[in-house]
Each structure stands twice: as C-alpha cells, then as structure tokens.
Image (cartoon, rainbow, N blue to C red; front, side, top):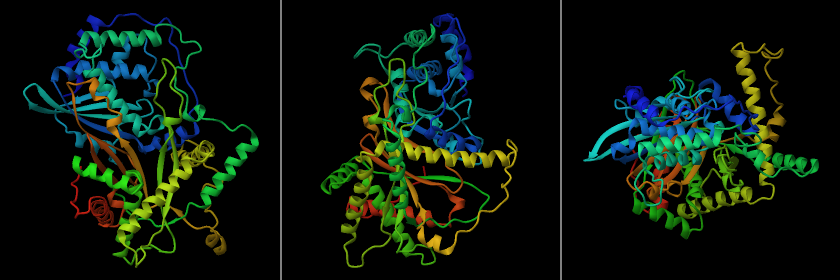
Length: 531
C-alpha cells in the first residue's frame, strides 16, 4: 500500500491544519563536505556504498501510525535536521509535500524484503544525491485487538550520519507518533502534529536566517584544531607511525565472480544470556566490544586450522578495523541546529594469528580481549586522538578522490589522464619485505546499547520489539555489527557471498557463535538463522 493511496486523507488534513504562510524568500544554503564526509560520499555515487539502514520493529495502535501521522512526523524530522536533504520549504505544507516524496507504506512487503532490496548491490540504489534519506514502513498486521505490528526502515547515506544517530532518528519518529505535548499526557492528535509542523517551520523558515547555523557544521570543524604548523606536522608524523604498526597478513580467500549477493546472518541472545555475557565480561575487566575482536580472532584461527591451503601465516598477525564514535566529544548543538552529523574516527586492532599449544583456550581468549581493549584505549585516551582523526580523515579523502577520478574517467565524465593505462611499477623484493602487509580480515562495528538511545517512556502506547542495522557494502565486502536492544544482545554479519570461497565465511561464523557460547556462556552453541 503506497502512501499515495491515502492522498485524499493527507491533503484534506493539510488543508484543514497547515497554513498557507509562505517564506518571503527562496533561500539557499551550502557548505563544503568535510574530508571525512567526502570519503564516504564519493564512493557512494556509483551504487550506494555504505548506505545505512535501520529496521525498527514496533507495535502500536493503528490510529497512531496512520499514513498522515507518519508523513507529518517525517516532515518534522526533515525540518529539524537539514542534512536529511531537501529544498528549504516555502511553507509548512511544502515541507509536508516534500516529506511524502521520500516515504512509502507497504502492506504487500515485509521488513526483510525491504532490507534485501536495499543491500543488494545489483538492485537499483534506494537513496541518491537528491534523496539522501528516506523512510519505508511495512505493515505486518494485527497482533491483538487494537494493536498492530510495523517494521520501519530508516535509510541514510553514510556521508551525513553514523549508526548511532540513525537509531536516534528512529526513536525520535516514535516520539512524534506516540508522544505527548505535555508530560504524562495522551499522544498528540493529528491536529497537534500539524500545529507542531507549522511551529517548526516558522521557527526555521518563517523569516530570514541571517547569521544562523542552518546546516550543522562538520564534526572536524567542531573538534580542536592544531594550534600551530608544528603541531600539525607532529600529528602527521604520529599517524605515519600508526600506519607502520598496522600489520595484517590474513584475509578471507576470495573467488572471481560476476554475481553478487549480500547475505546477513544474525545471532540473538536471550535476556538471561545477555545478562550473563555482561557479567562475564565485567568479571574479566573487559567490555562486549572488546570480546568481539577476540571472538573474531579465535574464529579465524580455528577456521584457518581446518584449511591448510589458506594463505594464513602464523608469523603475521591478523588485523581488524573499527570505527570510534566522536559524538561524546562534540559541544551541544546550537539552537535550531541538529545533533546529526558523521562523527567517527577509526582504528585498527591487531592480534596474534596463532594459539599457544600449551595454553588454555579460555585464558588465551581473555588475554586477546584485553589486548584489543588496550589498543583501543591507547587510541582514544591519547592526547593526539583528535589530531590523528583529522589526519586520517584527510588521508581517506585523498584516497576517495583518487578512486573517484578513476571512476569518472572510466565513465567518460573526465578526460583520461595521460598515465591512465600505465601499470604501476612493481616494488623491488627488498621493498616488499621491508613493508609488512596492512591487510584487514574484517570490519567490526559495535553500536552499543540501543536502549540508552530509545526513550520509550515518552511513547508508552508503542512497544519497541527489535532493531537491526547494517550497510550496503561493496562487492567482496564483509562487516560484523553488534548491538543490544530490549536487554538482548545480538550480532549481525553481512558479506557478499559469491565473492568468497564457498562455505568459508559460514564456517567462520559458526566458530564465532560457538566461541560466544564457549567462552562467555560456558556451554555449547546454537546457530542463528538467516535474517
């Protein structure tokens, strides 16, 4: 059921409540993309690399989730967060209309079907440079009298946001649908939502916004900058030292394939199991994100032991990459501004690729978790942390520009460079030996506790059931994401199945899940089902 089927209801509601007040001007605002934003935007142009989604399952009285209410809530969100991308609306009605262009409600598709269409590299990209965010809702039907289940898909390009903020957006939409205008009051009526949309528009666009921050500043602009050229040089030298220590000699074996199929698998832990996981980690002085690296480490070692044909040298460590949130370091957003921005730094975790023959596997596992913890802490607690983040963003941006130039030349958008067809010279043998490989086995992302984001007390008539998020990866991509919601911990692994040797990633996943039950829950594993 497309939201256009309810156009008569939406337009009549708009006519009855949305004033025709029009801004006296047609303003235009812009700012350059930051280095980090550019590093995500340029690779996304072709087929949506790293486009993010969050699928939120919830139950609510159908009157709270009518098409008009959903469109009003999405219109309000787009007003509050200008990076959701729209032309500055000339009126509240215009804002309502614009929101409708990036929203659909289905009664003939499921949430997993929406996910499959979004992440499939061969499918048309759902988002674009014109529509960098959208919401789709799948209706599941009645759960009990007066209560229906919905799956809301919130989608955004990674260049303007990160996983934590996407979950926060989902929560804010539920607050608008089921929240009250007064503490402890009933949910807002349709008329009250219309009034709120008009108030939000008048605050932001009812008059000229001279000297105000219309587009939220990039994260890099809100972090401390180098105090001098000497300090800037010190940051660069420090970063080069980090790069030299980023050694990894292990990758999943790939196979040549024209086909692509992005697969997601998930393991869910019960509430009691999650409590045990947390207690066990606390007793060992580590956190769940720390043990994610240790689980990947042991899962790969056990997988490689079963495949002597793999190029998995024990003399070289295995490396994983991860993102670190900068959000808690940012100053509060200015009035009429937004918390929404790409607020990420990055680091590598390097662990040994062998198991000591005489050591207890459990002792080795917890040692690896502490090693991962120490490496991440050294990065985040360093006085050079912000400087490293700035340098890494610049490096990522330069790489993205180089690849984007190649793509544009191949597509005929730019004239080919004079050396476009020249092969790079192979390094001399001694140079290759002097530079250990910087290959990463897998990306690991830990979103944390979504319950700390969801303010469910603000919408008591809506029940949050589940939430899962991932990204649209490139061909051959692989990424593991963990989070917890409703006091239940879960891990999702996504990869491009045809690009990997048959059964290898599945075997790795089996060892990962088995390791979680072995080391964290002290019992045999139970395999997860496909999402």
